[in-house]
Length: 72
Image (cartoon, rainbow, N blue to C red; front, side):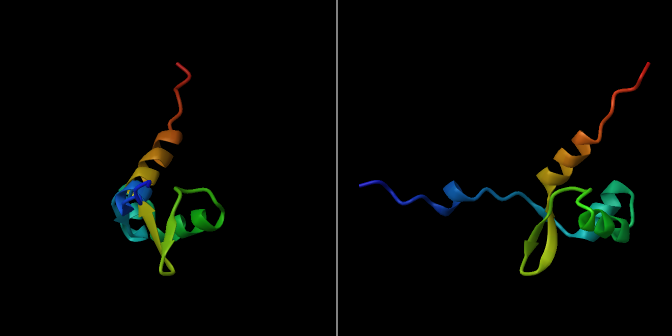
């Protein structure tokens, strides 16, 4: 009989950040981050009980995608 998967086998969580903290890290206002959310421009986010949260890994991945090579 196959074993039932443990919760940690199904969902991998990393630290969640509130929008204000993400905005501080990115050097932007929380309002700008909210605008980016509405325009699907910023980091991926999750809603937990109606509240917006950002996974640290999502913010890191988004920042990495913003990197551009210089034209030197």
